[in-house]
Length: 222
Ligand code: GAR
Image 1 (cartoon, rainbow, N blue to C red):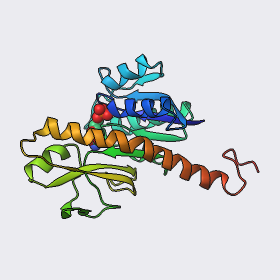
Image 2: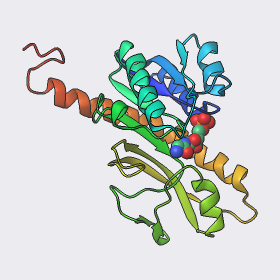
Image 3: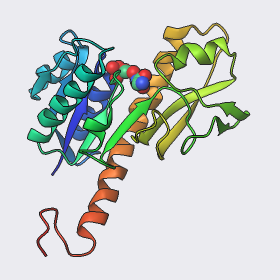
């Protein structure tokens, strides 16, 4: 069975959506560990309730590049110890640098609360025409401030450029009259909960086809 490492800083509803999909038989995987940079993250409580191993790794100083690189190395060591097939950023709010990313190339997916293009473009196609690609940590608010007709959710492969990797799945979410950040984010999360388990299943299948498709197993044996 495929093993997932879930990295989460927030309330953990996306992590819970993965657990629910696994319990429903819609995702053939297990969550080997949930890692959070915040001790008080809801994701940690939800994982403990589900008897999933948890690790908390706080980042002391966000602004010190040395501390960031050391954190990334420690995080990679922790994740690697659980031998995951795929790493899922499910509300992970820290940017990961090369000390982490280079250890798991092509094996990290992220869920993002806006529509993203496939790659680094500044626009994304939507049913309302070309829309700005919203990147960063405040994109739900940005969609409201810009008065966009639609926003959405995207699951993509993580690459060194933030929020610019290949798209796995995407779903539009319309803005409604009277929306505020909380109401809009709640509807975006509903879309994320539909997308994330499917995107994880697709990525696991893709990785398995590439690893096992030529008669070679992951340990290199024939
Ligand atoms: C989700 O909306 C996710 O897309 C977002 O944080 C939320 C976490 O919710 N992630 C980012 O903004 C990453 N840049 P959750 O803790 O309830 O799953």
